Each structure stands twice: as C-alpha cells, then as structure tokens.
Image 1: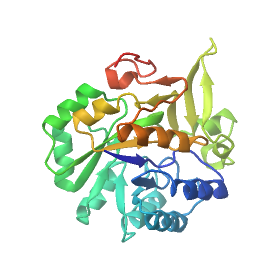
Image 2: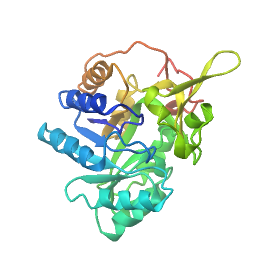
Image 3: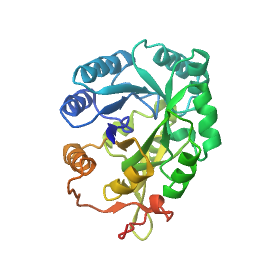
Length: 288
C-alpha cells in the first residue's frame, strides 16, 4: 500500500504553510493532495502558489493531486474550479459533483474525493464511467461498507482510505468560526488563522465534542487506523491517507510507513476508530 497526505483542512499563515510542505517533501509520502477544500476566502496561498508547491513536491518524487473545494457557492468559486481543472499537469480530486461534471466533460481522469459520499459499488461505477480512477472512502463508512463496495468495484479503480486525522463530518454555508466572534461570514477577519487545528468545542460536561473549522465541522478526537493496517491491506486498499496537522506529522508519517512496511509501530494519544468497526465514531475499539 501507498501512503498519502490529504489536503490541509485548516488555515495557516503563508510561511508556515510553505515550511510545512518543505518538510512534507522529506517525509515518506507517496502522494500529496494540495489546495483549498474548505473556504474560498482563505487566501494566504493563491492558485499560483499551490502550483509552485506542487512542482516542488513532484520534483521530490511525490505524486501530486490538486483538490477542489467541497462547497461551491459563487461564480468566483466556479472560475477557480475551472482554472484548477485546466492546470495542464496535475490530476484533480473532485470533492463535489460540479467538479465531476467539468472533469467528465473534458474527459480528464480524476480522484473521487471522500465528500462525494460513495457508499456502494453502483455509485462508484457511475463515477468510474465519468473518469474516476481512484475513490476515497467516506470516513464515516467502515470495513463492512468497504467490503460491499469492493465486491463490485470497477476494474482499475484504486481505493484510498482516510486513516489518520480529525474526521471531516459536515460542511455548511454558514461560517461557525465567524459566528463565534459575532462576525458575518463575508467580514470574518479570517479568524480561522488563529486556530491552526480548529476551534475545540466542549459539552456542558466539559467533554471534547467537535472542532469548528470555518464552514466545516470536524471530530474533536483524532481518527487513527494504524493498528488496522493489516485489515486495510487484506481488504484490498491501495492507499492510506493521513490528514495534515499543525505539529507532529513527521512522527505520524513515520509510524504509518513502518506499519505499511510490516514493522511494529504505535502512536500515543487519545484516538478513536469507531467508524471502521461499525461503532459510534468517537469510540476506540481496542481489540481488532
């Protein structure tokens, strides 16, 4: 199996983002996904900057995919999507059906992102007919769903599974981070940049519940399928995806690389893996 790094879901300062991907070039990832998938107002890196980073990572031997935004809300968003599709060099991960349509019209192969919600082989077959060469399983799906999809998977389509990071749970037209500061979405003062791993929300009992990330809602706990690597391999998964985080990515990437190579590996932390086992997502199933 190969190891991939998904698109950065958070909003970081420009230099911090560039430094992060300079480090990624030295880490044991086979594939790297780049681009803004959450909010079009995030502009520390422009389209040209992402392409520059893509070229640098490709030069370091990484397969690079450019990821589209998951929620298209305006004509300017559509224009940005069309420019992404027309980049002329790198494949695109389609994260909503508008991107699928544009890519299919241009007869360009693409990656079907996890926000397309592929839960059965029939849906995957439709996407494959439109040009999908890889699909990313929705993180709330588990091993039973995966087995069902793979039983009818079109030949030649690769399978990628989200295996580490805060779980992307929902998107909304409303910006929850802006609302927290009594700001309008269009005048948000880019508050997301103050929360490099999102804004933690706790229950009244002070239990960590969710993370607000602009228009996106994430899990508070970090999903971790490191111990399930043998199950993923046995199921026929081609690629294991990690999600960027503000600190400690090198240790996580190293542990997953060792596990993929058949070596012993572990990570300390308060993790969850419930979805994979058909349980509530925040649970940690110890016996796998």
